[in-house]
Image (cartoon, rainbow, N blue to C red; front, side, top):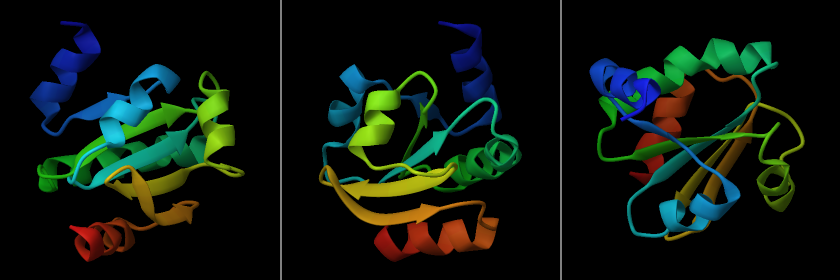
Length: 116
């Protein structure tokens, strides 16, 4: 198991890195899926990372994932990601909520609660 995966398990809450070949399979199903579109050079994205990690621990029934828009440009284009961070919530492989930009932990939690 890669070091990053072991650290994720220790920190609690799993956040899956998605690629074009794994995306559709991950968002399919009845569970709520929270996807964070981010980039390594994006300071607001990095600032939000601990918030997303905290939410992934609190909402264990929600699947959390992230898409690096630098290496996964096709996914960013497919979902018309124009600014980062951008968050998408999926249920049954359909987008149920979309919100760009930095958001408070409370705002993100309310969005999750709305669709949970």
